[in-house]
Length: 318
Image 1 (cartoon, one colour):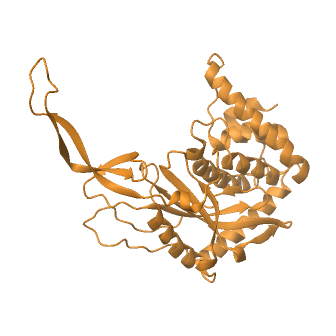
Image 2 (image 1 turned 30 degrees about the vertical axis):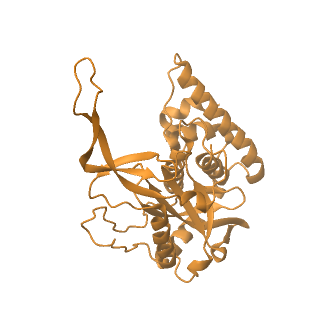
Image 3 (image 1 turned 180 degrees about the horizontal axis):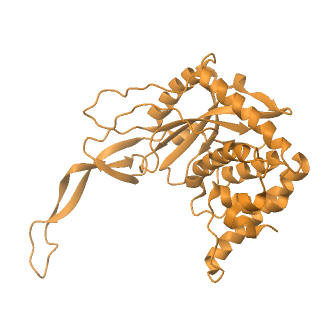
């Protein structure tokens, strides 16, 4: 995971589109081929480069419209103002920043002091806006509403509808057409659905012994080849961490779906056994949100049982 806690200035480093050159031999002989070389520009392409250390993030088309992190955050403020409606955008604060050492992408989460609610049993869950941008084209510029448990910063992207908008990357286009689809009224509906889901989770019994196979199902972990030491090592490392999280949450919250959700969102926010933890946080938090909705629907069936629900992972039940 990150060795430092990033601040907003770390995200705002200078970036530019730079010409690309190739070394081209223009003279010399068979026995002295490097006698004279020149650098020729490559037509049709440019490089996305960090100006402070000349690191190249990616190669893009000549007419590519570079979106800097600063511009992305400015759009995020516009989005925050529209989606959270009555709140003063000037009071929004950075809640969390996820960015790898390479600085190739970032997720910046914004909250507002007045947006915090004790949604459930005086447990402070806060709605937040996530602004995502990347220079290596790993992530498109994106905006999402999530919820975060303030006590431990467990994040979750809840709901299957993100904040839709239009942004053209072509320089031939005019300034971006920004229209955020999620309205303040829809945000209120999303909050209501989230609260109701928490209540349903709290009412349903979930024994700790099913948590590891449940985590495998939610996050899509592959069952390892027992003959493959590397696969077994990663599998065991993840399992041990989930067991550790169970010992943290279940005694405090009880043996229920709410404790299970906290185990999953904690793992999603601070993943273990990943080659690139920072690159997986957003995806794992989204999977946690999808699970909440799907699980709440699944447990409404009278014949629900974990053996059927867990499928191939049922054999992992302790």
